[in-house]
Length: 350
Ligand code: ATP
Ligand code: MG
Ligand code: FE
Image (cartoon, rainbow, N blue to C red; front, side, top):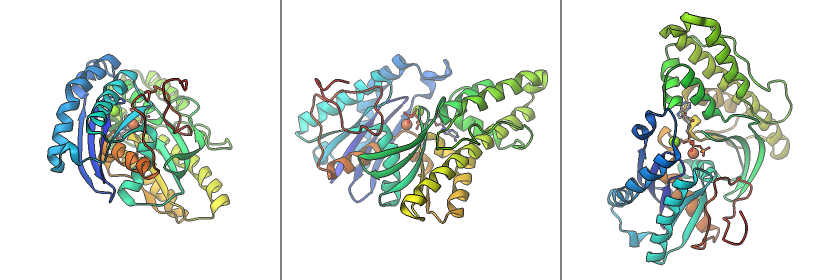
């Protein structure tokens, strides 16, 4: 069975075609970088309009790449939230129209579930597994029990990891998109030069925090004065920040591992997902942690870390296998916590 997946929740317009044997037949992503660069961040109205302009083209392109026709699809999957509501409406309206015309099931997918299930698409791992989900809007540690069963072990009490990367990148004058640019600059820097905090390191539980770290970077920049403008200093600061994030993520993940080991014994997979999972230093820190605990470590290929349609198509396949299909009056939701994965309907209240 082949499913087409549509992703429009933020600033990537993306369409993927995936089959239930875990083959990615098409994976088309249009990142709206030029549209938002001037504003150094995502502008919701501009994003929604760009999705309208691109989506049909990407659907056609994905089908051409896959060598298939719409009629070959077993279902149409689409991100229904969480995300920017304008973009979500564009994606779901399109998906509903396709599903209605084809007479095929509509699968409204939670965007975070799509990130969370990517490791099953790429590596075919079984449930349960421990997941660190680190993206632009979310940072969570989750026990994943099933395609629709997520147990939150910890979450950020302030900023998301990706948000911290983006804000610090802005402070360093790197512009948008922040994460990848910061990583590129940090490559030339000394990660030991600035002693930045590791938030919550002495706290019990699995919650995360990045706002104190971000403020420490700001204070450091102010204290540096003119020197802060030097390329080498900025690289050192970027590297020191990146290492602090990686340390902090692995320290909090270590606690979640202890929790999982107490419950299930050792050896469950450790999975990282979301845009920040593309970061080499973060991946390396988590790989080391997994090795220490004899856990298989799974990080998606870089192209599947950020937003994409293949992960949405795959999450759709997982829903389809659970016997799920969603009504054409399904709503989009700007907020949609993972532990409430059923899709809402008109009348059921948001
Ligand atoms: P969410 O998934 O929470 O709804 P989102 O979809 O906007 O948010 P993603 O597309 O999953 O987030 O990830 C984007 C985030 O990942 C951005 O904050 C970006 O800076 C960050 N990111 C991307 N590449 C890297 C990298 N190499 N290093 C650090 N951060 C990165
Ligand atoms: Mg994005
Ligand atoms: Fe995302």
